Length: 192
Image 1 (cartoon, helix red, strand yellow):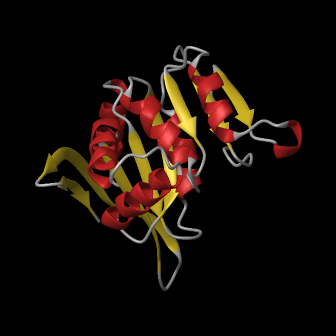
Image 2 (cartoon, rainbow, N blue to C red):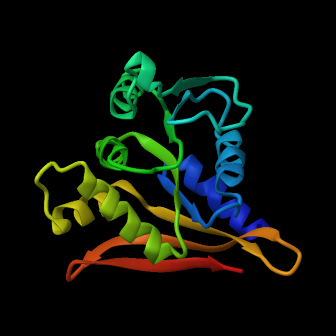
């Protein structure tokens, strides 16, 4: 990433702006999320909640919670439990299904969050996030879910693995500025 992107991410963390890191397979989403989490000041508590342990970050005040179906530790339950541990930041592993709804609810209710999602663009990340929230089957319509996402997230970082040398780069950072006529208002802040 460029020095300007680095400063933007640091400013977002200082302001407790929630971040969605998106990208394709092997694009480096989790690695980027790890490095962002390491930029969080050491006096702030990070609670990491994951389906499968993938986060590999070094932070002095980190608590890790991992789902385990055999033990009855489901993602939604862990997200709720993690939110009660007074986190300054809630770091959620890659969103894969209905846990996306609980994640968005917690972030929209005031928890600062960082999470990742598999996607082919910033717009595709938001569409996939909507679909996952619908999986929760809470009876909410698409307009309600879009409003929730727009109130929860502020920045979307899009990560790519570029050919021919397979270098991984943050190629776009966009700000979600709300909704207009039911569509996300995206403001590109940086582009590679």
